[in-house]
Image 1 (cartoon, helix red, strand yellow):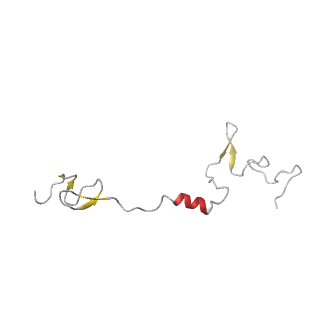
Image 2 (cartoon, one colour):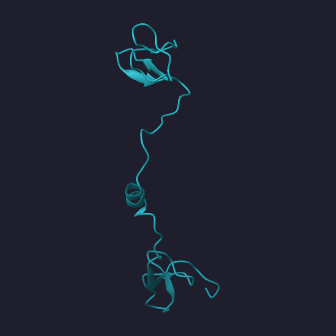
Image 3 (cartoon, one colour):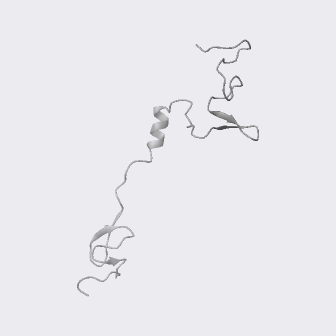
Length: 98
């Protein structure tokens, strides 16, 4: 149990004792509150399995989109040069035969 003083505040002193502030918060120059340097933010409550699942919904890996080069018939990734050096029907990278 917490120890309280005569006015019902926490008996432990320090920054913000008894004024409803969290122990690692300090008053801001504009009257607000900010965390003191080196203090980490901590979540108020656990994430539910539903929220966790919704966040992970976009994390699944997809197979890369493949195309067939019209001149050589090779399969390559979309918008990439084929292994033989062709892109969209034209030779763009010189090979050993040239």
